Every structure is written in C-alpha cells, then in structure tokens.
Length: 309
Image (cartoon, rainbow, N blue to C red):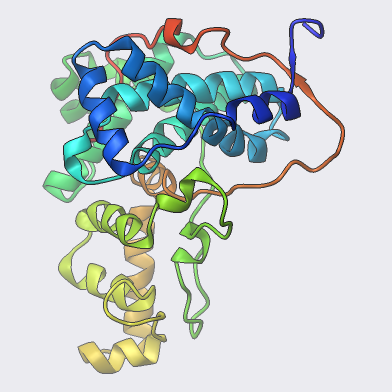
C-alpha cells in the first residue's frame, strides 16, 4: 500500500493544476455529461478533486485513513455530478458538497458500527432517509414505519430493523437565551482561495429555507429572525423577537426550541449540515501517503441511490 500510495502534497499539487470551472463552463459540461459525453464528465471530475481532499481532511481523525476518506469522497463527487441539474441555478460545488460529505460520513459510520453494516443495508438506510425527509417536507410531520414501508414497497419489520443501524449525527448547537447567533457563522467559508468560495450565503440561505419547510409558519418566523435569515444583518434576541410577534421571551424560546428539535431530526439535519463546509489546512509538514481512485470514471456508483430533489 505504501508503494502504491501518493503523497498528499504531491497529489494535491497535481490536481490543483486543473483550472477551476466558471459557472457557464459547469453548465455546458454538465449538459454534455448528461448526454453521455465522457470527456465532459472527466473535466467536471478533475476540476473538483481538490474540493474532495479539502472536505476529507477534517474527518481524518475519525478512525479511517485519509486515503479511504478521499476515495469515498471521490465516489460521492461522482454521484453528485451524476445528479447535478445545471438548470436549478446553483454552482456544482454547492450541490456535490452534500454527496461528498454523505459518502465520507457513511464510510465512517460503517467503520465505527459495533456490527459491520452490510452494503445493501446502508443503501436501504439512504433510501429510507430520503423518503422520510421528502415526506416531512411535503406533509409537515414524521412518517410512521408503516408509511415508509408502503412508500418504499418493503416490509414494515425491515424498517424497524434499520432503526438499530442508524448512527447519530452532530447536533445543531442550541443558543443561549439572550444570544443573537449567526447561523451562517459556520456556513460561511472563511478562506479566499478554495473552490467552495462560490457557495454564496444567498444560496445556502435558500437551501436552509427549503429544509425549514418542515416547520410551522410561526416556527419559521422565529428562526428567521433569530438567525438573521430575514432582512436583519444579524440575529435578534428573544425579547426583540417577542416584541415583533407579541410574545414573551420565554414563549419565543419555547417556539425556537421546538423548531430546532424538528431540524435536529437525522434526515433533516443531514440535509442542512450538508452545506456546512469546514475546510482545514493540513496540520503537519509531513507528507502522508494515501491511495486514490486510479480512474474515477470507472467507479461504480451503484443503483437506487437516494435523492432529495
């Protein structure tokens, strides 16, 4: 493995020679790729390989070698490119970041599970999560096991069995009563030289607003004021919001807590957190070795992958 690996620095230097794509180039290449143009697909992949490395680095202390994380992230990149719709108006990095992160997290979850989760179970878990999120967005409530089973045409006991496999994700932070948090403090890229600089705050706000459709109108209003998602430049305090909507600070706090509980549900949370990009620099001058997909175009994406759109 050592002799077959690549030096991270050398590999990153190599893939960084590939020019980043403009929004117009992304659209044109994506349209061609969807028509079966392999050269267009290759250009999309190569232009975004450095993005995968940057997203994989923060997970390097989660029990898997960086080589595995990058390989999983590359598979997520391929899946995201396959599913990217250039007509929706978002940059490619905005969309594929969710798939890259999902692929990396899935690999970590499988590695850390007390019992190794079979690949077919992982695929089914993804389908269940996708169905649940879409159900919550359209119906405004969590589906029952029976509803999930009917929707996916599988037996109810299979859904119940999957409950034991589900891994927990990091919870969204809950603010103190009189703090005025800025949710996009963590969503905003603090660097100036990475591909993800094109993931604008406006786009991320739009994605978060889509996820917030699981909330009631009052819950949405409270969170929009609380986190500065409306016209405010920063979030408002509980008392300020209370004055706006005619409630006490305690009443606003209860609504906020209820809304955040809904957003903490795994299927909603994983959707929201897909846009929280934490890019770190390498922590050492040492040059780690890792393996990478020798030919990303040959990666098997599998069938029946989950879709949130």
